[in-house]
Length: 395
Ligand code: NZQ
Ligand code: ZN
Image 1 (cartoon, rainbow, N blue to C red):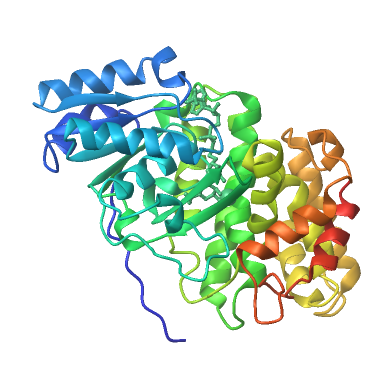
Image 2 (image 1 turned 120 degrees about the horizontal axis):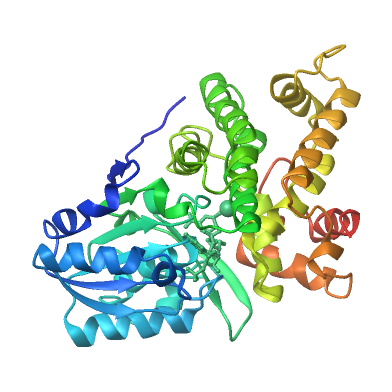
């Protein structure tokens, strides 16, 4: 029980908070690079409202639109160049996790010496993390990643087909403006994928973290139960603002570090999924929905008690004894059924992924991160063979 915790992001949460963007940003900068995705913020008028608030507060806006889902390194380079050429002094990421992640890395790339890809973990011997960035403001329009209030970003190098992460102190946004009204237009499938993503953020630390963290267990279970209660309501009726707000708050808490404090866990399901979305450009939450239950069935063989606890506390199953494997497996089945019920895929075939590249996925996964024996960190650590077995079970 030794740990430190700091999350410097100022959170501004609640319906209607977008109207404060000008006032908030003007405290940190005067010329903003406003980073957006493929156009949803224009269609739902979030962009127009943000720009008029920014201009009214004396902030000039330079646009960088067109960040794609699973954001690419070339988009990051493009945005950083615009920021540099235009002399921007602040970066706003307004969109889903992809847009916010790209904006964060653009902000760091502006001052970074050398190739920005060196910031991203990809098996290099000398991982040069960024140490400074332009001030970052995040405005999430989709409840999923938690990127708005953490120091992480995930970028794809389209030339090498490697998708991986950077985590650095300078990537924490100064302010996260989290306005659930902005998520009302998220389509049903993306809403469901976001729910799966946020749940997976806490199952990673729940199942892979250190032993003896009972309070963190309860936080994680609270996030899961809240997402399972309110998520289906948001999926069923996208205009249900109350459900959107509960889901979005859960998504912030799931990965702003609080649930993970002291657990020191690896994120193996994420590491495997990132390889799938690198190769197939699938939605991150959809990939997780397939990989997570398959991984859980694998990991439950070595630690049934942990999965039995999950079954008991999330699904109310009664245990015959703490190591009750049947209950553990029943809990995983029910979890998978929940994902299916909100419209998430649970088989690779639903994502049109076959068995042709299973070995490659496993190699790419451990290439990004591995222990001294070449295994993917987690509980249990996994060899390439284990990863192939997990993916094969999900075909
Ligand atoms: O591009 P636009 O037109 O904005 O459309 C997006 C996109 O097509 C759309 N969308 C977003 N907000 C909307 C909306 N459509 C209608 N109304 C709105 N209000 O949704 C689609 C998906 O967007 P994307 O940003 O890709 O989704 P998400 O938020 O799930 O982000 C996924 C990315 O984040 C990474 C993932 O790997 C993936 O690259 N992650 C980032 C993390 C982090 N920084 O902490 C952690 C996560 O585990 C994850 O790895
Ligand atoms: Zn995720």
